[in-house]
Length: 281
Length: 292
Image (tube, rainbow over all chains, first blue to last red; front, top):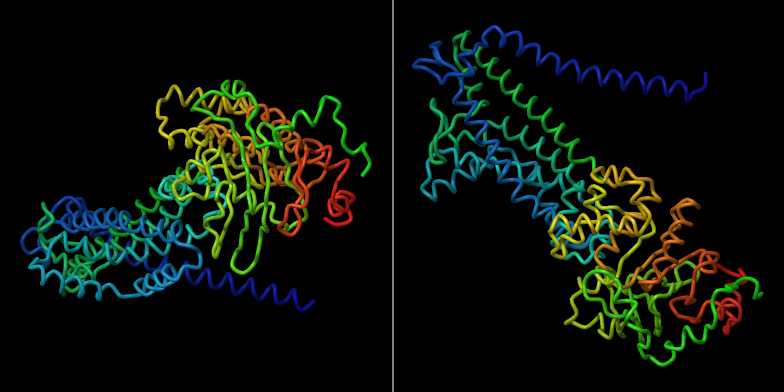
């Protein structure tokens, strides 16, 4: 057999092995969570807030953490989009391709992308102390917004950089100002916005370190931005730290709920993306 | 050049047609242009004087002097890299965003210098419908593609928009093909249909000029023919400036020809004069196919 066919075979086997390894890991994680979490999952878990002694095996559920996480994800995603879309638009429509400012900005966002969330948490915490704020839902939203802005910007920017020059020219030729091209640009990069949102939501809902100092933890559902808020990852953390095996199992149920929420958001996101990207040229 | 190359029996006298080119006067009757529907239309007229364009260190256009007649098809021909497209993009100042661009000289549209600081660039661009080499529909539905420009210029009445969309799609012969799927994405159309849609989109903002940059080069022969026929049809109402790489196309539809070489306008004049009796040696060589 010729050498290149042997190469082909070996490469194929390696690719299959790599894929199988990844799938095995994911299956294993999900299996562990299901095995320990599913028996402990009940309606109380998702419909009640923790009763007294919950973390020592008492009754109640983690509705506080579910709602807190959803509030934080929703708030930070909206805030993040409002801040990053103008940045991406400016970088790609107003600045020239070889602009130094754009280069530096992209570099900065790349660096911010890699900063661990605990650093954001500590940073936001110092600001909050300076402002005299307590741990609160508002603080949590703020730090998660900071955390996901680089994700938003860099993933939208990747798509926006592929924006066809002809498309902008065609829009200008109709008499559009740069600002008026935003309608065209947004439609063209809609799939990128959707992907960026999914990535950001995933990071936002799964973050524990950033919200620890800023959003705090509480057994009640926050009713205003200035009240502390519980989050699912922290709820998992606290339950998992318990010596009580039943409470540890509830941590797995909470993780299961977290994964389920991410799954729902992802599927919904894909459906919405398909809807929006049908016009993309 | 043999005279059989260009012969159009329907034209009576070239001298008559182009008399206004020699004396700057706008002596064509305004009455025909008044028939055009829409915003207030003045007679279009484009004059380039002493235009020089440098991009970084390259001298792209060298002292261009040119007049473009109204309601005619003007073809700009010349070998690749001679500055045809640059000249065309200068007319609507799309070239502004190019890195390191400098220009001097002036281009008058309707008597206004487009380089003047007081001139609003969006107004200039609105006057110039652009048709690019590859059709570039906006990422919207067929309907929205045409309505987009009108909405941008302040027309929001549904009824009016509907009638504009229908009128412009009919003007480019697309209405029958798409009337049942106006809300489907423009990108689903064939490439020839997309190019006609782009033309309709340009017409919807009521331009005075149509700038076409090798508008048929990406299309199949039948779609190209369609676009060419449209140009011939549309020259009743618009000044059409067509950059073309195919000499045959220029022979078929040009009324007026500009030959450019290395950034200079070598020869400009009525098509039959330039094609049948070129004054410059270089033009003759190009037409004979000595270089391209």
